[in-house]
Length: 406
Image 1 (tube, rainbow, N blue to C red):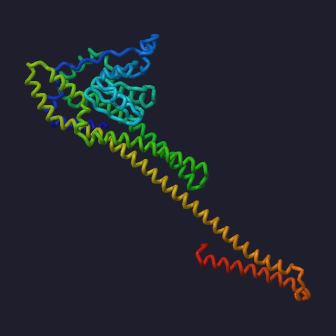
Image 2: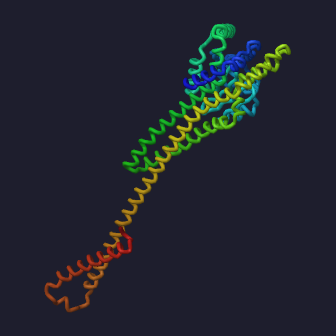
Image 3: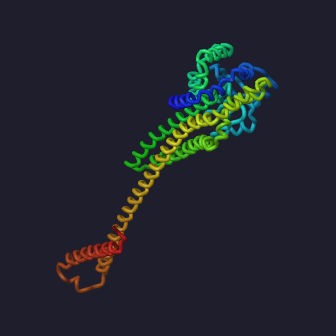
């Protein structure tokens, strides 16, 4: 996504004045740090009512914008109070299906195995022991290097503003955007790995089926088709969530938690900063469309990746359907061959039965003149055999004439 960030920064440089007025709230106080969370040892200890009260406690990994990370134990009420989201949003966002909910002060993110609550200052990750979530944490550590502490981080930030000017701020996306981008990258990598694994498995099964049709291969094909259907539904759900924000710019604007936080601070600023507030409003109106374009570019890139994965899955399903059709044609051909063989055998049995009838007629004890004729036995035998052959050929020709046999 390096090209995406470069294109975003280049567009900001062209509109430097408006961006500087919006993203340098020098006269505004920084947002207050979130309250501390309880440690794990404080959650594990306790007996009686305290354990009952903390029955819904889950382990969360907290990662803030300074690079500080800790594993804490929180229940839903603590997360709701900390992120200012409703219990319904948390329950809906953390359901089985993928969901992205943008609220006033937080983003509830549920993409595949990644469940997180993102605020302008921190991200709370659930089920942090999963390999995919650990990958996300490693990416966050690499993207947000650890600073010495909050005070040093603020000093470094102010020093960077003085040395680098306002150019550094305008090139940097908000914290929630960066976390969302990294989460989408991890999710796309996870889904793509699943697609690649199923694709490799699919080609091997299809090759085996084209060589030899067995019950085991057919069971593997049915299991593979079921797995592809489930994976396609998952990819479509994530794709639909991104497409929802791409189609609705108002919902896309709700993802800008930092801007909403700054606007709230401007609203709560003292009366002597009315001029600054008016300038901030005009600047935000100028850059609002650019911000939406930035988020649209970010979401569009991952939307195209998911669409490519969806097309790959659909292509594999088409190959599987084609292979199933080929197997059905092959089975029908073999079945028709068996029917053809059965028809030929039945016609042969019919001819032999007719010869047997003639032999039985001669086997009766009724006296006739042929019994006294010398060397007549051989002629009668060959005559019966010829009758059977002629009857077989005539019946077979009639069946082919009526197109009962190929």
